[in-house]
Length: 181
Image (cartoon, rainbow, N blue to C red; front, side, top):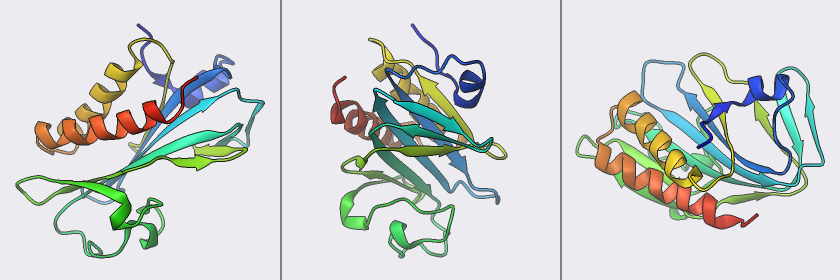
């Protein structure tokens, strides 16, 4: 079983696979809320990986699946996620999202379909508590990815496990079924 590894450390060591893999980027709100965006990227057959010290750019097609966790007191709750302020946006409208709401009225929004990134995509270096992990493609990647997302939503953000698991399963299934390597 291949455990997830920090993306940028893996790149710096020269061990980032170009054949295929999955990247999970989690961006926690810099303030004191649970507002969090997550991006899961699936890629294959990278032609080149370029770094400028802050961003890794992959010369490859990729599929991007997004999640957003939003507290009930978020002021722009009625604003479409695609039109929110920088750092709090995901490229979906409400009608393109599956929304899970817990008993405290926290919402987890998951894109119904992954976004296709043609020719290249980039991953920014994480800041603060945020992080980017790489998952090797193997027979256990589905279980590992679902458990990782569930634990982040449940343990780090305090969302009940039922809703966390539902959202994690939806997001992971979308990205894992988007492309067969």
